[in-house]
Image (cartoon, rainbow, N blue to C red; front, side, top):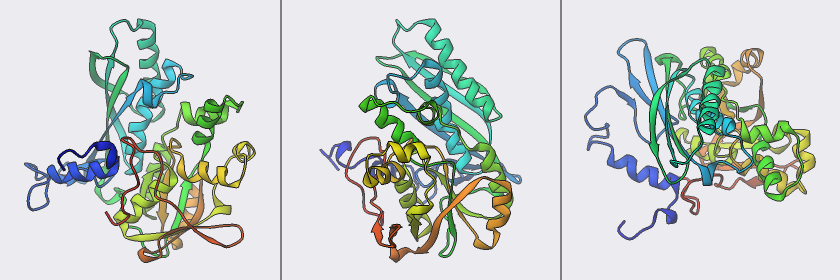
Length: 340
């Protein structure tokens, strides 16, 4: 693809291109027999530990100018840097066992800023039952933080993006659209509560809920919604080869966010297409839904359908609206084909 710019293909298409490079001709990752899940297909890579457990590994990079609103404190930047990685660990149903954090910063950064940053990272790690186990420091033109998180899960409890079946129920934890509303409020300088702002500034990785879901034996697929509910639905659709029918009236949205939205279209934009919520999108065997509801706070928002039926939203008037394939992406570009 000589002379093609990354901005013309976008993040997901570029991931697909790079993932092919990292594979051997027979489809396995180069040089490794113990890789169960490799580059590009899920929230984490999965490594075989040769016993009943497997190791899950993920990494995420954040930049001052593109990922941290100027209103965020250093502590909140640190929290978010850990949270984005721990949310991926949660998406696999795994228990976090450590984070490695690399920080690049301008040489004139104040020590107090870095201390607050580190305290935020550690606070998030401790909230999720783990700790920072190492990292790296370097000078950089702007604040850049790269985290790598490790998790452990039994092989028979590992949750993937593939596995959903037509008839499964579609569920989410928490609320959708809160982080998007918070960002809109900041950009338009409109007041919102600390609850809404913290959905963006201090996202909570659902690691505790993820472990309960993994142990339940009821979940057929799972991922996080950090790039937006719509993008997550499309990601699950590609891996599981199912469609989705989502009931608009069932979407869990804070009353304050409903009031903040200027019209129904804006509310739909918040709920479906803005990222940053870090909730879990889950498909569940309908015969086991009561068991899951007894152990974990989640909301049923729809059901899986045949792949050919597409991904649609059922409006309060029972009209079916195609959910667009868009959301938060690095390296912005038009949405790639659903079939990729």
